[in-house]
Structure formats: C-alpha cells, structure tokens
Image (cartoon, rainbow, N blue to C red; front, top):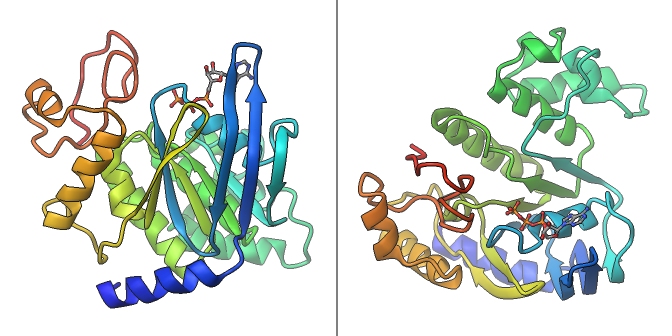
Length: 281
Ligand SMILES: Nc1ncnc2c1ncn2[C@@H]1O[C@H](COP(=O)(O)OP(=O)(O)OP(=O)(O)O)[C@@H](O)[C@H]1O
C-alpha cells in the first residue's frame, strides 16, 4: 500500500466504529493485577501487534478477547465472529484435516467452505490426512484454515509462528498478510518479535503494568523491507519502548545485525532462561 493509501486507510479507520472495544479490564490471579484497568479499541480490518515483556499479560488479554477466560472486571464489546490461532495448532488427532477445519461449523456448505479454506492456505492435498502426519508448518496452516472458515471479524493470533523454523515462519507471515488483505478481519497478533510486528502490523501496542503503555502507528508502505530507513527507525522506537538496549542486543548477537527478535523473555531473546540465543533467520 502506498503512503497515501495508508494515510487514507488510517483516517478512514478512525471514523469507523471499533470492532473491539474494551474498557477498564482488571484481571487478578491472586498475585497482583495482571490486567489493571486496560482499555483498547480495534478498528475493523486493522492489523495490530501486541508486544510486551514476558509475563506482562498479553495472552491473558488475548484469552479474554477470545472469551476463553471467565469475564473479567470491566466492559468488553466483541464481534460474534471470532477465531483464535495459538502457538500449537491444537488439531483433534482422530479427525482428518478437513473435519478439523469444519468442526463446529453448522452450515450446509461446511465441507465446500472447508475445502476452499484449505486451498487458500495451500493445503488442499492434505484435506484427508490425519493431523499427526502433518509437518509443523502444515499443521499451523490447517489451524489458519480452521480460523478462516469461520469468516472472523476478529482474528486473534497468539505467537502463531513461534514454534516454526525460520523459513516456514517467513512463509507463514506472508500467508497471514495475504489472508488478512483478502478477508480484512481485525487482527491482534501477540508476538515477541519486533521485526514480525513491523512486517505485518499497521499498529503496535505495548503492554506494561497491566495497561497499554504505548500505542505506535506503523505507517510503512507494503511490502516492507527490514533495511528501509522507516523500518529501522520504528524498530529502534519499539525496542526502546520495550526497554531493550539495541547496542547490547547487537553485541550479544553479532550475527543478527538487524536485531530481529526482542529481548523480552528472561534469559534470552524469546528463549527460555539458560538457553543460548540463536538466530531466527
Ligand atoms: N490461569 C492462571 N493462573 C494463575 N496465573 C496465571 C494464569 N494465567 C496467567 N497467569 C499469570 O499472569 C501473568 C501474565 O501471564 P500471560 O501468559 O498473560 O503473560 P504473557 O505476556 O502472555 O507472557 P509470555 O510472553 O511469556 O507468553 C503471569 O504472571 C502468569 O503467571
């Protein structure tokens, strides 16, 4: 999208009624408020990345928006048509792929829709396969097809690429962007990867202290490139918002001169404590 078109889309979206509107969310698991008066609006068709330090409450917010958690304190307005994709594909192993995709879909054309969704994610040839015979990337594409077939107005993605190898992750990012452009749901993507946020989203929100601490528009033309000056400037800004020292990151991972992932998990950049940092590409 050109800068002009991005601006038109951005100004258009500000006058639309939000598809998601939450106000004053409070959630407590017995050890302080994880959500502490959080408010957030999402515009129809927008793509928002949700970032923040490990344990700051991103998944809790996402589960709340998916209505997978009990209703929290505060007000939540959501569309009926919602779908979630998690880090793990969560396919039912004793149902074939197509059946997984159409599960719970009560429409006479469910099978045709399921097949169309599988075609969109490039998985037509695996429609009759058992989930356990799929590769990690194929299983995640099946999970995307299962989300897509519901024609969601809100698509919630909780680190959907985190468990995939680097090449598959790049392909999946491209696929998600294509599907978003074709179907225009509002997308909320939880990610630990600043570059992923900048490649895909038109807005980044950063959570801290149970609230949205920063709300940063990403008015970059698409397709986006890591080396573009606007991309680099926004990366620095986002890393600063996340409290990540870019120089420290570059020194620690010299092979990753573009500091692709963010240091928000304890002990490593998106890695468990004690694990050695590894390049994501
Ligand atoms: N069901 C639960 N019971 C008790 N504590 C919980 C529960 N779910 C989340 N928490 C706690 O709430 C906090 C926020 O967790 P959440 O998973 O939302 O964080 P996150 O930002 O998604 O983390 P990460 O980036 O590491 O995935 C954490 O301290 C977590 O231990």
